[in-house]
Length: 121
Length: 121
DNA sequence: CAAATTGTGTATGTTGTGTATGCACAATAT
DNA sequence: ATATTGTGCATACACAACATACACAATTTG
Image 1 (cartoon, each protein chain N blue to C red):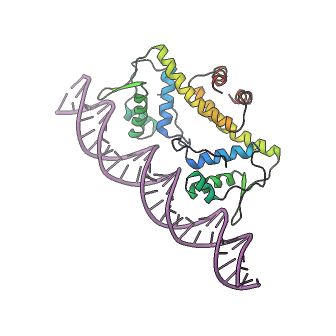
Image 2: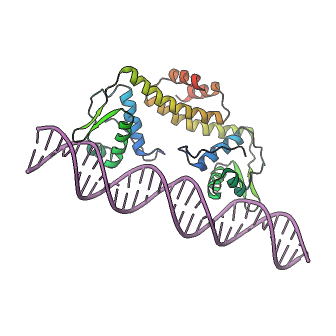
Image 3: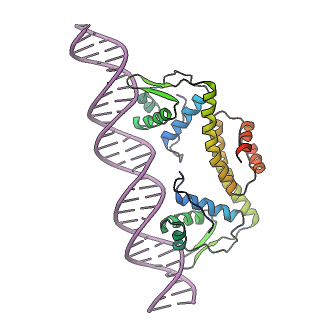
């Protein structure tokens, strides 16, 4: 459980959890079959409610990243490296398109965006 | 009033309005002193409530982009090209940093991000 | 010029949606 | 049986969006 949540963030807590766990799975840091911590324990560690953790885990389940088994726990799903890459790219591109349209609305060119990115990345 | 709002967007309507008007001002499409449409008329055109428009206009006021005069209207503020650029970059960089941290969480390098951006921009 | 009218932004109260919570329940493992 | 796991339900709170009524400024008009 290497997670950091920010109460000041504009993003909901459950979404922060979802994004960070997703990234860890898709980076290969959490292997297939790995058992996530019980929601109570996670909630205790992260100082949030059980419900909030559950909601994040539900999102992971819906995205096909984990399998939930009542009474046992939540396990990182099995998928091929190809599929893993596909999901990863899908999530990233989905977000990136939204980001790009924001930049475009300010009249930024691709080169300008790249220039700014180089400064802050 | 060249605005398009999406009810299906995850972003609040007032924020969509704020972002689009901001961009138009900072692109120079709306000149200093230009009088924004009355909130009633804007609300009617956009098929939203007066309150929603007012909230967006309030954000613009707070950002220093417009001046509101009760009984007269809301006018695009006067600022130097330098200041205009400063505000623009501030808004964009602010968003971009958040975007970048998302990409980083997936382990993307700067080059990978640039590569993907080139594909979709 | 003063009163009425029109046009502008403003404030109040209500409804609906979504985040986050605690506590009680169901299913599973040992 | 008992402990451990996930699940369901009722609630509190915050916020977006709404309709309506209000207050102020400019204009018309007698």
